[in-house]
Image (tube, rainbow, N blue to C red):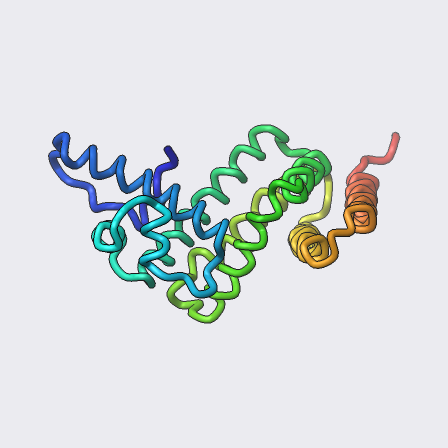
Length: 219
């Protein structure tokens, strides 16, 4: 099971017996189920009783583990951010410091048909978070700040000048998300994939230009 982000998890106890362990496992199970429910049903009109019924527990049990509806939503957002960071770390391991490989792998995963329900729920949750940015600051930071450092680092390694790396990484990040919104809206895979290929070509040109500037002249 996925472990919840420590920022919303239980406080660390000096001594943990079997009861604490069982409770932790149960909370992780319920968190996985709650995230899946939100992905499937969205947040519009979210109600504790139907959610608890779908999870196979009473609404009192759900509230016992997660508090109020608002606290449950906050915990779901924190769990999504934790999974984002985990996904980013794994991608960095898989692709190393090759920005084009990272872009290809990221788009393949993001645009997969089975991934689209995730993005529908994610964008709805994002809209909810923007209404209370001070409450959901960590989640909102994850939309941008969690992804930029790795891309900037790979661009610098590929030869893109430091003065341009941040803006290029921002453009790649924002454009990829915009294309996902286009795909969700239109379902036009052919056109959107062509647009992403154009983004890839622009990134390749940026990398090539950076390398040409840093390449030492022959003696």
